[in-house]
Image (cartoon, rainbow, N blue to C red; front, top):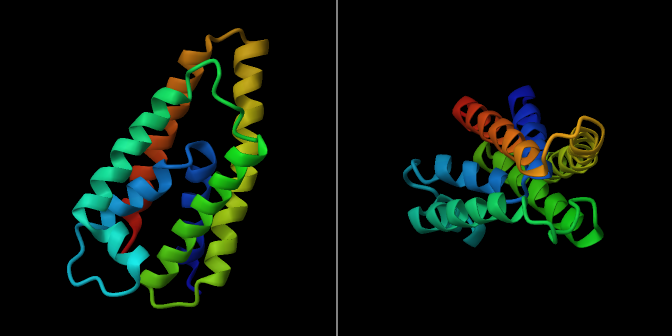
Length: 158
C-alpha cells in the first residue's frame, strides 16, 4: 500500500466522520470523470454520473438535516455505524483504484471516520455550549471545513 493511498483512505475517513455522505459524494464526483471503470457494482455505481449526482443530492440533504434539533448525535450507534461504513467504503475504493488489496485501506477509512466522529462531536459541543456559537453557525463552519478537505483530497488522487 502506497503512502498516498493510506493518506487518502484516512483523509476520506475523516470526512466521513464529519458528514457521512460527503466522503462518498466527493469520491464519486472524482470517479465519474474517469473513463473505462471496470469492477463490481459498487465501483460502477460510484463512477457513474447518476451515482455521483444521487450522492451529491443526498450529501446536501445531510448538510440540512445536520442543523435540525431532532437529528441524533453523530456518535449515536446507528449514525456512527453509517459513518464507519462510509469510511470503509471510500477507503476500499481508493485501494481498488490503485489495484491494491482493500482490507487495510477500508480499516484505515473506518478508523478515520471513528476518530473524527468523536473529535468533531466534541468540537461541536464545545463550540455551541462553551463558546455559545449557535448550532447552525457551528454546523456551517463544519460544512465549510468538510467541503474544503473533501475537495482537496479528491483533487490529490491520481
